[in-house]
Amino acid sequence: MGHRFFVILSLSLVLGLQGCSSLADKLATRFADKVSVRMNAELKKKLAQTQENIVGAMLDQEDPDTAVAGIPAYLILLDSMLLSTPDDSRLLMAAASLYSAYAGSLVDQPDRAKILSRRSLKYASKALCQRLPRICELESKPFEQFKPAVSKASRNDIEPLYVYGVAWAGWLLARTDDYSALAELPKIQFIFEHLIAMDEGHDNGRAQLYLAVMGCQIPANLGGKPELAREHFEKALKFSGGKDLMVHVKYARYYARLVFNQELHDRLLKEVLAADPQVHRLTLSNVMAQEEARKLKADEYF
Image (cartoon, rainbow, N blue to C red; front, side, top):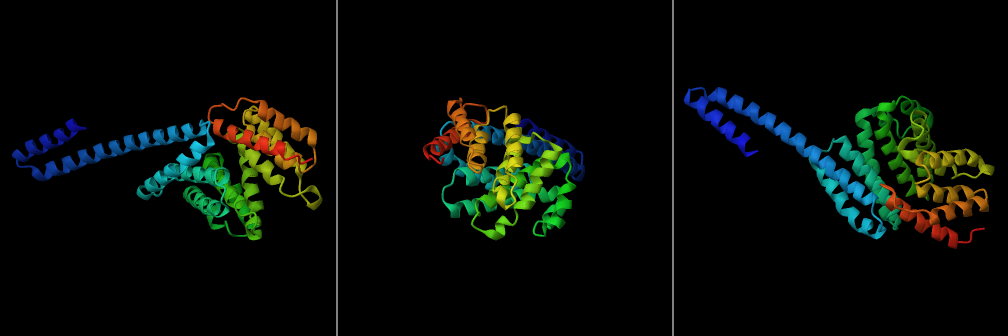
């Protein structure tokens, strides 16, 4: 950038010698502003690429302990970046997603999970409110008032709505002992129903997986619909190409155990343990799925 700075100085000097210092100031300021905008755009592009690379490296990590040790530093980095650009929707969604994943999968302490999931939901809500403020305004209202606002979301709103739904589901997961929090389940469920209505295979079937797990929270004799949940699990397997081992594990844990289907349960766990976990952007999740599968197998539930 040194040659650009020298051009500005030279331009100011020449015009100043001609007795046009005020014009020189204006031209120099405009030129500097253009350079600044371009520099900021380039910096944002590099930061976005760096952010994507870091997330990719984490998702491809084979050792969960390394991910556990490294993620907090990146969370703080995202927090610090948002102090400078608090309305950057891409950063807000990145922070929300990582906080949610960390709280839901890598933190064992319930109190910490509650704190981290709350921050995730805060960032996700802010990103969504920029596009769909009506949803945020009705978030605490009864389901029948909330539902129409979500229904108005279009395909252009899928990503912030999905991040919001995942963050809210993670927030709920950290508060399963709170009946007032569980009362929000129908709202979260409808968000994912609307998402898959717009894009059935969103996030390689992960949206289907969230619906499947939520659908297994209530047994059939209490009004639940486990067979509908099974349909979502099957679709999650289909859209992930069977490569997302977490789908198999959750299928076994939440559905097969709920309906006492040992044959399905054991087959799913066997497939997980026999699979190669190294899949681009799924390696960390798959390694963790295999760890969970070993625990479920040793549990002797049936």
